[in-house]
Image (cartoon, rainbow, N blue to C red):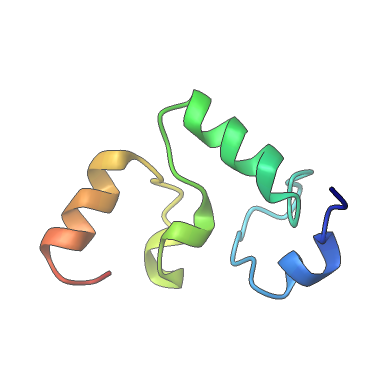
Length: 67
C-alpha cells in the first residue's frame, strides 16, 4: 500500500515541529500506542498543544464534552 503522506499532512495537527512521523500515520500511531498515548490528530488543537496525549487526558476531554 502506498503512503499518502502529502494528503495526510493536510489534516495533521501535530505541533511538534521536529517530528519525523508527520503525515506517516501508521508510524505515528505505532509510536504513540507504545507509549500508551494517542496521536495529535485525536485531540482538538487547544488540547494537542499541551503535549499531554495520554489516554486519561483524552478521557477527560470526552467526559467534559470537549471532543
